[in-house]
Image (cartoon, rainbow, N blue to C red; front, side, top):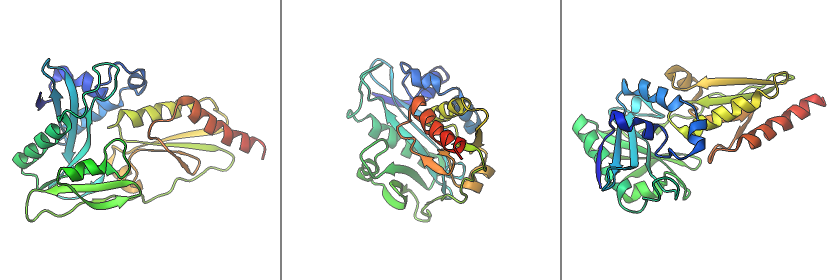
Length: 263
């Protein structure tokens, strides 16, 4: 097993989060490709882990924190570390040290780039991007919003700890309409999938539903809201991890439509 920088020939696999077998990845559209193209100019770094056959089995992506979801200076922010863990496709490659190798490679890269620390987000519950996993690798929590922890490992004595950028505005409704609001940054195919499903479901009710998209890759819009990826139906936030099915999103919208039709 070895870790290398992402090459041009590997980009399609990366865009699909190593899940080229997944119909859902195709349903997520081309948002990740567009995000990648824009973020390369801002210092995005991607490394992949290869098995003995040269197959990509893991990935890590990180960028200067000034373009990410937390406040900080001279730090890099990890969007995600992922080692393929499904039986489909290339099979389960987790618990073989690939994630640790990718994290170590990213840390060495950030030091070489002159970064003063590496920042990660993690969940306090045992799901994807577990905060406990980062703590085992020497990271410590510096901030928290709900079950999302912000962790870091400083590489310089004068490094300043980062902080979450918190939500600042609330979604508003429109009298007599159901408002479906999708915040989409583009970095995560799972969240891009939610956007595509919500947009398609909202279109089923053209007279009653207003669909509004907020592109949070636009730094000004992100700073204004303090929300990167999220889905709201009227003023209620909908859980998007794991991504709800198209049918479930449509049913939630239909329930709200039925309510305004009876008013």
